Amino acid sequence: MFSGESTFLLALLSFFAALEQHVVGAEITLNVSSLVWPPELYSPVIPQKLLNTSSVQHTPAQYPQYTDRTIGKWKWFSSDLWTTGFFPAMLYELNTRRQLCHGSGAGDANTDWVGLGRSWSTAELPLEVKNHVGHDVGFLSYPFVQELLLNPTNETALEAVNAFATDLAARFSPTVGCTRSWDSPDPTLFRVIIDNMMNLEVLFSSYARTGNKTLVDIAVSHADRTLVNHVRPNGSSFHVVEYNATTGEVIGRVTAQGYSDNSTWSRGQAWGIYGFANMFAHTKNMSYLETSRKMATYFLDNLPLDSVVPWCGRYFTPLSFLMVS
Ligand SMILES: *[C@@H]1O[C@H](CO)[C@@H](O)[C@H](O)[C@H]1NC(C)=O
Ligand SMILES: *[C@@H]1O[C@H](CO)[C@@H](O)[C@H](O)[C@H]1NC(C)=O
Ligand SMILES: *[C@@H]1O[C@H](CO)[C@@H](O)[C@H](O)[C@H]1NC(C)=O
Ligand SMILES: *[C@@H]1O[C@H](CO)[C@@H](O)[C@H](O)[C@H]1NC(C)=O
Ligand SMILES: *[C@@H]1O[C@H](CO)[C@@H](O)[C@H](O)[C@H]1NC(C)=O
Ligand SMILES: *[C@@H]1O[C@H](CO)[C@@H](O)[C@H](O)[C@H]1NC(C)=O
Ligand SMILES: *[C@@H]1O[C@H](CO)[C@@H](O)[C@H](O)[C@H]1NC(C)=O
Ligand SMILES: *[C@@H]1O[C@H](CO)[C@@H](O)[C@H](O)[C@H]1NC(C)=O
Image (cartoon, rainbow, N blue to C red):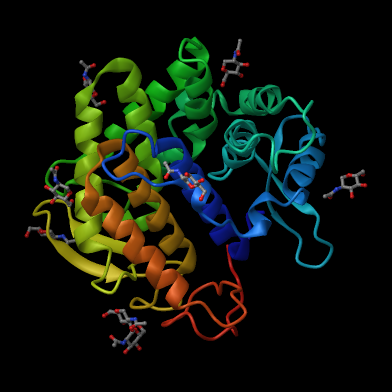
């Protein structure tokens, strides 16, 4: 599920989930029941695969990230890897899907998705106090954000979300207007990756419980700077924007995992599509929705004929690139 080509599917699923959850109360109204879904979105194979994977036990706990290229078996990783929140969060998402879609595409009616999500979260709980996970706090916090939506008084989840949000806030520079991604030996080199649009949810989740408005201000500032400096006029995106931490100026626009500095890394584009839609869901600011739509339009317009998402590409055209994590 988490290999490069499935990233878009994941983003698309999340994007629709975000729309499903937040259409009520938005300035624009979207009639979800009138939309036509690609049938793959509700394939019964999705819950079956998640359920099968959830039955695998490792001691100490390990999490699936990607599958072996030849035999298709999961590769397992320790709980502090940046992707480990995804699996438990997807278990929670299947519960949400069951409610929103009247059971469709959520597998057996008796599957306790919430119970599975909870038990798969526990090995991640020490992470919020270890404080070595850097900018990936947002990804790691997803299961706890989900838990609080169901049970806002769960103190364990609340402590985790607040600690992750505090860690992220500590990476914010008012001069740059963003949270820092990778640390650098030169403290004046301040790198921000498009991925970090995915972190902002934890700030909103903590704000919803604590009322600490500073967290929302940080999220809005980060999104505004990203909108201006990462997203190109035609809706494509840079992976990394380098700022000078002393002056706040943009000093470079480069790639780290894409094909070239001026290409569009598919996964990063997906992060932007989701991240700006999510910002709209929280703020109702149409600029974010327009940005998300512009990025989604670019993504769809530049897909190859077979719609298999390439890892990257100047125009997304050639399929000759190998996928890398
Ligand atoms: C939403 O779409 C469905 C299916 O097309 C239609 O039956 C329903 O009347 C629409 N609801 C509103 C509020 O427009
Ligand atoms: C889940 O596991 C069962 C039993 O091992 C197997 O028959 C089935 O094909 C698996 N389903 C998927 C979607 O991998
Ligand atoms: C509270 O949340 C934690 C972390 O999400 C979870 O592991 C635990 O099962 C939850 N407790 C209850 C009583 O639901
Ligand atoms: C709000 O969050 C910021 C960032 O973590 C923190 O510095 C500040 O102390 C918090 N305010 C309150 C009232 O807790
Ligand atoms: C940032 O600007 C300061 C002051 O002009 C300069 O000393 C520093 O070398 C710059 N850092 C980078 C990474 O360009
Ligand atoms: C909405 O977002 C845009 C783009 O970041 C920003 O320039 C504008 O001030 C925001 N509008 C409001 C009402 O907050
Ligand atoms: C895009 O980047 C590549 C590699 O960094 C470079 O060769 C090419 O000239 C650049 N093209 C433009 C239009 O800037
Ligand atoms: C989008 O804009 C970028 C930067 O100007 C450019 O390199 C790229 O070729 C454009 N993409 C398309 C499909 O026109």
